[in-house]
Image 1 (tube, rainbow over the protein chains, first blue to last red):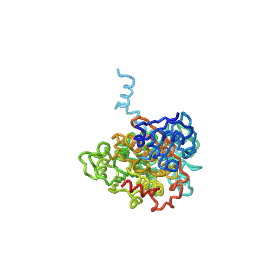
Image 2 (cartoon, helix red, strand yellow; image 1 turned 45 degrees about the vertical axis):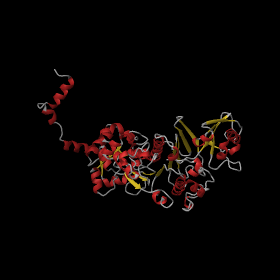
Image 3 (tube, each protein chain N blue to C red; image 1 turned 90 degrees about the horizontal axis):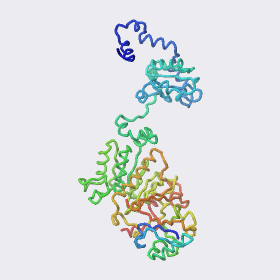
Image 4 (cartoon, helix red, strand yellow; image 1 turned 60 degrees about the vertical axis):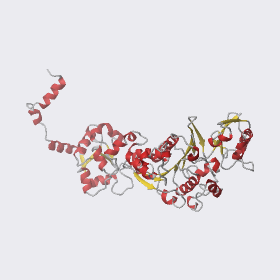
Length: 90
Length: 427
């Protein structure tokens, strides 16, 4: 199972969990598994059309999935999926 | 019975041993004899031989030109010297000449202040070290200047600066050249808050010559948990004034330019133009997008950090060299996912950590050392005590930095998808 790292602003939707294990062989499947486990995250991750929201950055390990194959990017069990929020605190 | 060494010293000062000294020439006679043995060269001929007569674009020491060697002391050399001259103080002549002139058949012209020390040095080079083509400049740099020929007055640090920045000068990565770059640098800090406080203090201490500070806020007691540039007795003062006081207490040499204003579309171009680097520690998304677009247009690098709770992010956005802020974040999150430190809290030391990482990147950019955090995003999780690095790519379809800087209009700066809805929700 891969691990999804949850940013602080989304932790209230995962019951405080910082890392959530999720099944799936692509980034899309892993994020869908996360949304099934913690339904409140779905609206934050995906738009009504099922695509990733523009304001959500997702990385497979250290690489932005936008430069890979997006939600179709293959994921192995050793991979970490990072959800990255923009922050503006100063 | 004195030791042999003491006996030797004693013999030298013995007033009864005058016969030995009486055989010796006077200093003036000695110099005359030395000059008989070396070739002297008139400033005009030296100028022709070194290519400094304007006939060649190359400076002294290049191509077929004679090489100039200044044999005076460090301080004299720093005051002024002939352009292109290598510096080998006469006291280090034998040990350092090979570094400046490894080829013993090369045409060398030595000079000092008036022509005596260079004659002595020329004799040493030809008689003791086998240099074949050495000349001494008649009248030294004094006659050279009297003839109206060019001299170079290099920039140097004052004695106070050498002492203040001595720990920088010891680092080869900074040194005198890097310190002069720091002294010349103009850095603009957006915000004298959590991030801006430590950044400003350390950049001032490091000798950054000009620090601009933009902040329209006043010091509040709730700031003092993290905004270390301010003090309890300055609560209620404008932050720019309080910051200036602390900066000058550390380093009175720093020029502080205060902008007691909120950065917006009406003033951004005027404020940021002319700065070498901008340090972004602003607390809201609209200003971060506005800043990005304006800095891409003016091609000014931004060292950007943001903090929330126990987490920090850091990156350099260097226009056209790496990604811009919009390449990383094409659009901001909705207001409920973008809480502020005021609403959500922040660990007091976190902006210290992130602000000093920013200051470090600023100094690296100025002195040109190391690998700047361009094209990389550094995440710091204070609770986990862990750093994560993510790659950030330039977006070939970026609405801003995929275009010519001149084509970015002021009307579109800072605008992003759903901008109006975002700002309405943010109130």
